[in-house]
Image: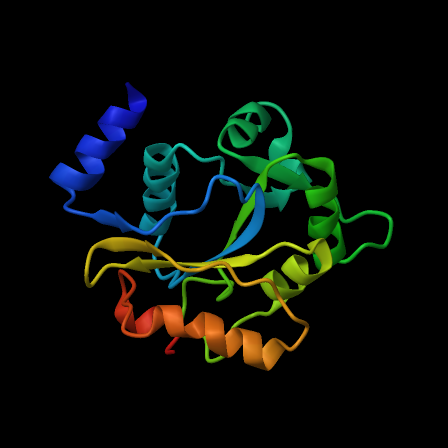
Length: 183
């Protein structure tokens, strides 16, 4: 019922479409979601996840997972990030992959909804450390489509791999185009 409602709202009322998919056999990955220019990106992600019927996840500081919101954030695919014990964010998030059977982590490499000249590379190093592919996901407000690219298993050559991943975002516009990273 919820899935049908999401489809009706997303496709018919909002006029969006989903192009491509994630192979359901890929149980663990890092989804490189760009451009991230607006809070509207959150519900687009929720609708996309609900329509596709695949578990998709995010991480947030562990304090957000306390009562009363903890249940809701876990239900929405959230995983608490515990940075105690001297672990940095990359190591802490990569460690989560070891504890889950399915974990498709959505990360916005811009790190903010404001314009940035450089992408943050944490998403890449998380995928490299967890030995999972990166899947580029474009939220293109210009074409009203959420577009999934081909998985890329990081090789350790950051520049070469990022260049390949960026091709997926050429000509893509966020809700607020001036705030999006320019590919």
